[in-house]
Image (cartoon, rainbow, N blue to C red):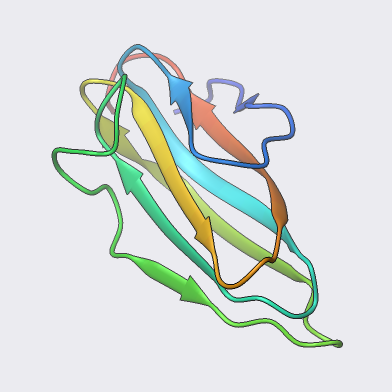
Length: 106
């Protein structure tokens, strides 16, 4: 599939990434250097429920590990849309950009 990947723009909390069927292609997360991030990606256009597109990711962080990149080259088909549920341990923070690709499954 040669469709262009679409950026979600920078996000800092749980959010709808796509409200229509698409391929979830990946995510880049900027970590705060002190707090772990837990990430769930759902096949859902409105909330954190339904089928998970990938297993739950728990991403540790440290002073030297500040960026996490997940690149799903062919993407994972989301029939209903994509909702990302993100939580950060303690009083930490993170920012992320997710990528989708619209179009027919293929």
